[in-house]
Image (cartoon, rainbow, N blue to C red; front, side, top):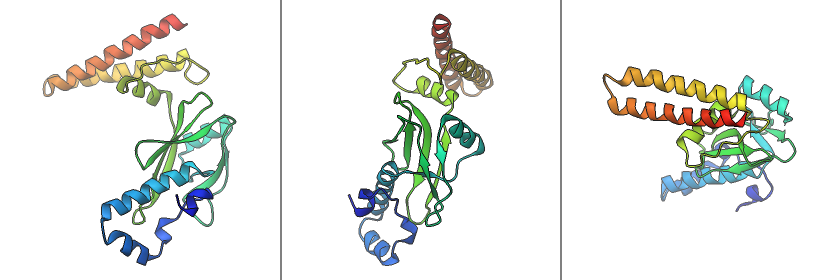
Length: 203
């Protein structure tokens, strides 16, 4: 862990001395960049920053949830200071460019992308929708359906209904040229119906 990690600041890798880039890349270029991106994730997770690039819908939703969003940092406009709602925290992921903000129940609520590579440094964040959470249930291993103030019965129902209808439409379109894909779409639609059945019992 370097000094930047310890003091909770995010290094602007694009401002690093070009000689250091030359020396770092003179051996294994891929490893040099990978280590830079992994360090960037650690620095971001251990900081009080979020990317300044947040879409209007997410920004409005975050303010409603209790986020305090600052102005872009003049020293590094890619990021801005942010105060999270009480009990919320930052969390890394198994991909160096991805991290999350989780709520007091440990649920992923904000998705963050940060590419720390000096030659293409960029970052953005967005609020995770209930539909995205529903897709994660469909594609992931954890099938636990949690009903709370965010993922209400009504919100889950709307999300799974929308996904099911889209999958059934895609299945019909794929029947003639991609039968395997059509079958996969119908399988996901059936999974949506299973979740919808659970939600009917949760009302």
